[in-house]
Image (cartoon, rainbow, N blue to C red; front, side, top):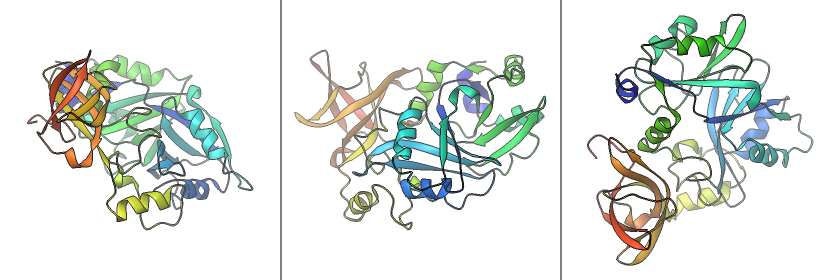
Length: 322
């Protein structure tokens, strides 16, 4: 049984480095994060969570973060490798606020479980508390006297839960390593399936070069909330329909290289941001192109070793039919 089959029909587990962790403490934490990011987060109760985008003054992406309100702290899940930049960005706006932050990525280990049968896989230590768990919310289980934070996160395949636990704990690792009916998803497979699902990555699709509307993150923006950093720019782009580029997928018979320029009728219209070979879809990539060219199945051209090759636009996510 392959990991891909289990990923789509049963369950798999992975250890890919997806998140960095910042721990925040202080009475003003949620209020500060609410003032700095695109989504509502100032009313979170214990074990509730949300996802939001930190943007700069130009409305460009600093990072997408998940905010989990734990019993004794607030846990921020950043993109892996973005912890320091996120920490420094937030600290810029701490003046009189009661907020203390520290990076805690190395204090924890993480496992993700993906697939439609995820609940059955982890019910032995999570019980039935996950059945009605909303997206980004958390439950805490105890395994051998240690806490395991179980968070429902955006899924690449129907369901996904992230398990976060002490770096000193080996019981969770042992549990999954001894489950022969739950295949392990190698890191390279995970990132291919993430690309297939149309999920971008830090410093590629999600960076200071792009804003949340261009990146397809409209669902993480609350247009009814008050001011936040970058709010005026994002609101103006939305109101006047001035989103100039879109994140799309590309398929080709030829290898696609990151940072390749995309053209249409000899006119530069975008750039490849991530690419890979998928055993299901062939050569695929994520790219930003000008909005007026972002139509399903339209032909584009990209450059490889000073040669021009053709590709087809695929609106995200890549599907079995695409």
